[in-house]
Length: 340
Image (cartoon, rainbow, N blue to C red; front, side):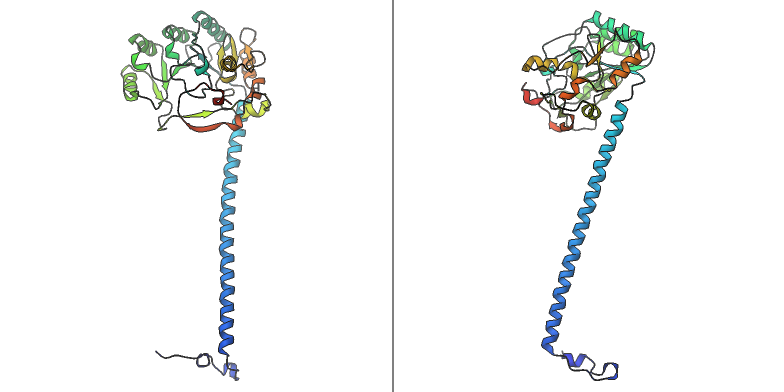
């Protein structure tokens, strides 16, 4: 293969005039200098590309954060608007046979306690008077509601008081297969739905669903699309230094999980059941006054609904912004750290 010098390649008569022959050493040095400069430029371009990618990631993150803030703001605004209907949770029992860690009804800490039929009938009569025949939602919860030996009486009475309401039972499902035909027939006759959660325990959920279908009962798994039940933790600020309004606006329970207890209505399930926490750990965060409204003193349904759409003093104990999710399911050890 022929070899050429720079002089062979470069035309000595460019532009019609003779040019001074190029010095090989100078050419090489110039070429090396240009190579280094190109490398510096290339490195700078790559660095700029990385910075642009980081900026794009920050923009996406900022968008996600802003979207979350917007959603929280929107739902917070909705919480502050009085509801148009009645939505009530009642605890048929306080204790539970599953005892999930950090339960926000404090069932692992509760002593066995059953709702009184006559008292609840009076309360339901009063609510029916206030809300008239306004459709609403009423759910039996706990604890584990199927532990109540008179649950069938409660079901029939509730439907009689609220003929147009949606009524359902939220259960952990552990007792469903052992419930009597009278229970299932009452669900059917009174149009009462059953909602349950799948827990990582030894239980035949397919058999439960099959039985509900056979009995003609409306049935739903609350975590049908979630392969494994997880827990979340709402930590308490035992000194009560949280901002009430912020806690209310961020809380998914506020003006949604409305709780009836002893003739009083609470805007969430945590405030009324925290008395179990107080008893277990010697704290003093539970109080009826200011945190609930007496249904017998309320002059109208609207007065109750307006009360529920406002923060309550108990909100200052809830560090809602520090709620953690995705905790593997496990049973409670009844330690204060599960709630703080």
